[in-house]
Image (tube, rainbow, N blue to C red; front, top):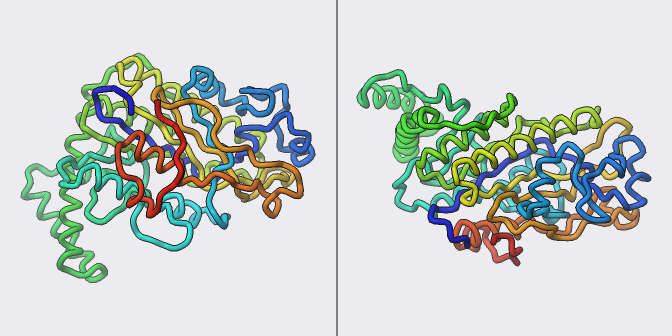
Length: 378
């Protein structure tokens, strides 16, 4: 655990659509790479090499620079048993940390409950984007989910608690035929009230924020800016969640055109965020987990890549012990998993490492088992 005075904060960036791991962190010196990727490839001379075997996509220069500073951990070969190539099911597995069966609670939802068992802070976790990721859902847990911080607020135009309570009661009655009354209705009403209180608090974050950093114009860049605003406002938020719009990284076609732009946007947003935190002496308080739901096929389809398995994830931050973790999956044809990279690094090892070493929680009840951890945190 680091010695910083403030509570450690986790930012989760979900790259929805399944980015192409093979062209994100590239085994450029492997002779099989160009054999498998005659069209959709990165020329070896363009790779941002970290050693004589692997390196980053050329659009990821800001992240490579942080890697060189020892602030990026590359989690190679990440995945889970019996890979599933459905976006929805695979994301569900990442969200719940349960590959074998369907469960209702998310791994971060359980973490939020442990971080704030008495629900003393309605902003323990904040999501930026549409809806609420399954990862943050858990019984008795309220999470503020924000589309745009500059005009955030549910019913915030109403003056007074009485008006809002009446509106929430109407909302609960509308949904009562579908959800029933009693505890469920009460829970919805309480969650709604929490959301309203959270909206009031969060709406103040931009008013107190000042920075010389200019973020890009993509939705992700703006959401990451919002995370900086809320974190720097000292609301006590411990977990932030956001990501690219659904399907963005699903590069079945035109990957050579779209992937560079996507990684450019993401990498620049992360670099801006780090610079923003640094400007406010908050860069040691935050670590980022960046992941996607699965990898893509080893052999390209002539223009893009189709759903596969075996991926790469990243931990980023001043408190992270940078370097390579796990083994890069073999590209030898006979060692592929039905034509895909063979995962060798259970993602729950990373979750356990984050929960225990960074968040200070007991990972076993959250993940349902004990996993060997990486030494990820300084």
